[in-house]
Image (cartoon, rainbow, N blue to C red; front, side):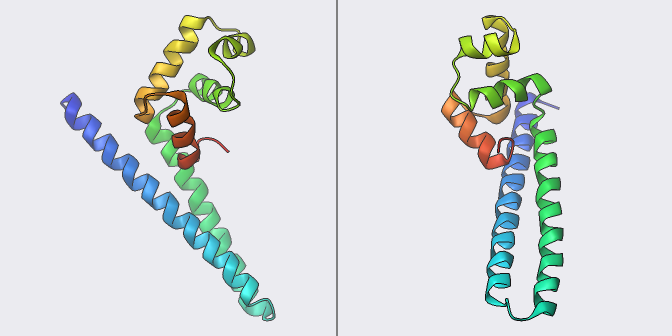
Amino acid sequence: MKKENYQERNRIARELYDSFAKELADVSFRIDETIGLNSTSPKTRESLRTIRSSVTQLIEKSRQLREEKYELTNREKDVLAILATGASVKEICQTLFLSQATVKSHLGSMYKKLVVTNRVEAINKAKALGLLP
């Protein structure tokens, strides 16, 4: 498969996962809202809680699938998590006991996989995808 076709397929998959996650989050919010409005009916609340539990499981599964699709390595996830705290490259190096070249390599690889160009975009995209809390 040509590189351009592979990249286009991944871009489309990412957009679908992003859209799916947003829709599930909206459904979960609406269920919580409805539970609050129907707080007097125990049967209705219980039914809605069951549905919410199913939606929560779908959201978690979607998050796991997105992580697999973005294929970040464990070390890249470590770097990303520390990056999200506002740490510099030097601080990441000290925390993970890595050289600057290695950290920069992980950052470049993450940026490419997330289709971003800088740390702020990477953090925002990772949060939107559920890769970060």
